[in-house]
Length: 72
Image: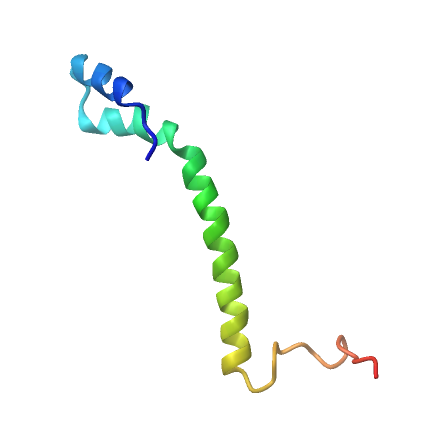
């Protein structure tokens, strides 16, 4: 987490509670880190789903024959 230590120290001098500290300083300072982590993890989970489908399924990705016509 990349929260500025000086901001946390300032909030503590104003008797900020832990919940206020979390809601007003820590979460807003780290929103970009949360979003970037979500983007990476969603992509990796999609790769895992597709890989698992290839390994487990007997019929491939279950694409209907009407839509999939191999060009041979």
